[in-house]
Length: 278
Image (cartoon, rainbow, N blue to C red):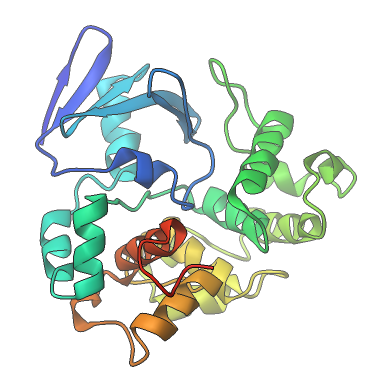
């Protein structure tokens, strides 16, 4: 990987590749938005940036080289060899087709609390509405950045009441958010510790939280705890598995099931395979 400081951005090349549009807008994170200049704006760990991809080169605006290495290198999973993983996916007909169409979809390594909270909000919801709830959550309770707001911490969230959360219009999810925040803030759930245990242990711990089922736990495990072998299943993925993989996932996905899941989800979302779309 090669990193250099240009006049007004950090330029990153030789890291492999990324389909930035799909990676940032495929339902794994909810705080990125694209402007008229095709720049994606977001806030990660309280640091605001804008990013674009030009010929397999990433350009990060508004951040320092240190901030890139401290935060965004890991966030965009730039240290992982996606070339080898995606080459192995080509042993399966459908994943080979997906890789050919979509290029490299990377897993975003989000802050564990943000991932947990976001996927509690996501339960029985659609992406535009999830984004709206989370935007109101950050605007109402997050720390200000240059032109946006950070994600409210578990400690801050635990200090809120159900009445405080009325502004979010998140319905029955509000008490689940407060329950999760209190368990994390008080150390009953140690999210950092869960990064180094099995996905089965992650599920066991996370489902202790009121309102967190297997799907939310698995999403948190994949997108917030760094376990790329986690495989969240919602109705879309279940439909794909029933139609394309009734005997189980192909062997080529072993150890990277979560990355395969993103391709499968996008295939269903775009309706590119007949018989699995709504």
